[in-house]
Image (cartoon, rainbow, N blue to C red; front, side, top):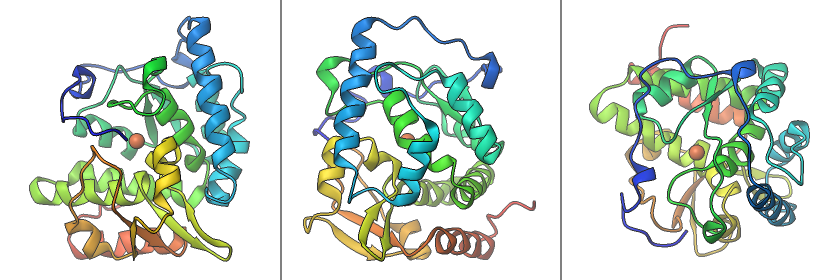
Length: 261
Ligand SMILES: [Fe+2]
């Protein structure tokens, strides 16, 4: 990621949802230009080349399951249908970066809010606001994974209910797991964090010795600050998604942040 100043781009200002947004079959697909489809094609091809030996197998299985077209932008409606079949999640089409309340309220309902615009050709390596390549390619494959999808909903529900410093702790948890998590496998460290997997620079950076890697520790994560504007210098490594889910649940219960089912 390039160093860019916070809020230098109006797209980084969260939008408030004033009413229902289209979900699942209600989502209409925009008329994308040939250049926009070509941007997806380039991003998708480049990122897929990087992933073998770096991305977690569960993410790669999810990527195969999503069956994204390689030559045009996927329709959010099709993506939603795939997620629903896999884990009962749906996609909602949202106009941009959401306010935290609205974002976590979606997750708590097993709804993934996705944008449907793609970055410009000048932003291939970095975009200050998440676009559909981040939302679709980065996030959706992991939502086909049962344990991850269930954890993701519980994280959203806990964050929705939290206030003040606890909300901030859950945002950190979100950052260091959903967006920037690593996992230890029998074949070495792999990436499952969606923010890394959708970023060309972060995929190449995150497994190198330039990054300090700490074992998963919910208490430590909850207090660990981060900077969204630079390549990440510190990441946390889980041993399994079960460890992630149990570790989160235990931590959230201990702090009174877990919602009753
Ligand atoms: Fe994200």
